[in-house]
Every structure is written in C-alpha cells, then in structure tokens.
Image (tube, rainbow, N blue to C red; front, side, top):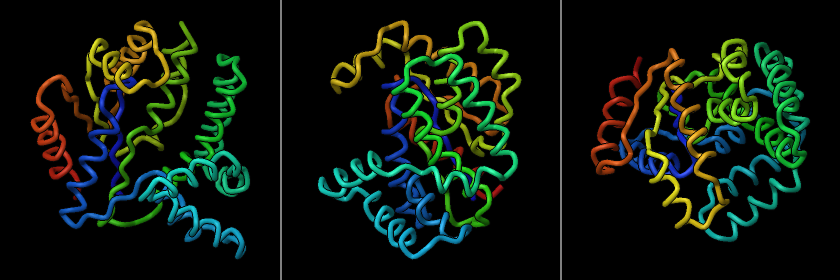
Length: 254
C-alpha cells in the first residue's frame, strides 16, 4: 500500500492539503485510508481478536469517519477512555517495531519531563505505529494511506526537546521502516503559521517554538531518502495542490 505523509510546523496547512488531496483521489476512485480507518479496518485482518474486540473495532471504525458532531464527540471520548496497550503488545514483537519503540520512548522520557505530554505521545504512538506497520504489510495497489502527521512529525516532536542531541538522535534512531513512500514538506513561513494559529484560537505557540519546528521539519526533509517534494504554501493553493497531485500520480504505481 502506498503511503503519503505531510510534515511542517503547526499552522502550515498539513490538514488542509490532506483533506483536499483525499477528496480529489476519492473522485478518481482511489481508496483512501487515514490513520484511524487503516488501523480499525486492517488490524482484525492480521491479528485474532475476541468477539468483543471485533465489535469494538467496527464501532470505532464507524465513529472515525466523523460524519457529524455526535460521531466526532463520541470518537473523542472513546479515545479518552480506551487505550491501545493490548493491541500494541500484539504487534510490538515485530521487528523493527520493538527496537524503534524502545529507543524512541527512552529518548522521549529522557528529554520530555511533562507527564501529560509523555502520556499523550505514548497513546498516539500506540495507535500510529501499528497503523503504519499495517500499511506496509497490506498488499494493495488500489489503496493509499494518507497521513497529515506521520512518524516524521513525531520525530520532530522528540528532537525539539533534545537540544544539542537532536542530530545524534536523527543519525542513530532507526525509523526508516516507518517512513512514508512520499514525503511532502509544507514550507510555510513562520509569520503565516502564527497568523493562522491565532485565527483558529488554538494552543498558543511562541514565535521561537514555530521557528524551531520549521527548522526541524526542513532538517528531516533534507535527511529523508524517500520520494519527497517541498511546496511553498504562501502561493495560490490551487497551484500547490496541482503540484502535489502531479507527484502522486507520477509515483502511485511505482
């Protein structure tokens, strides 16, 4: 299954282009799987689950479509209540998942002292990593795994806290297996990100935080050996979208 991943600082436009790209590909009769749909659809195909878990996964798959406010709210509280420790334990013995998670969590806990951030990242990875693993194992040319924030975005979160150790972590953390086939860096300048975040009334980021995120995103982009494309999100969005589509169409059958 081909996979496409966006990286960039908060407010750069990753989610916007992911939705737009998803809608276009669906019109072209291409089956799109996002992080959650991929997880809940394919996990039961690869691992034996009891009847309760199967029903739970079917419910969660439906809620993950988020067709209305009730489903979005239910999906939110479901994630608050339910963890994925069991599912993660089933898949964590798979190489190279086990080695990567051990190294990642050791580094993250070393540099991130805030307990609530640790818990949030751990819960996210417990669903994200198996979903990426499944996308690599499902043999389907008719589907595309589309991720607005993938493993590279989590690596950026890690190295932002590691200071001078960031280059060491990048050079030694073996995460190539989890990288997407196509990496798209949304190259939005810091002032634009700041204005967008202010309009959305989201968590307040300082200019320095966004600048650091931008620089680390660019560093990850430069180091990646995957098919990659940098777009300038400060120009007309239709032009950007056309460039993204061109890259995807050229490479989707490779």
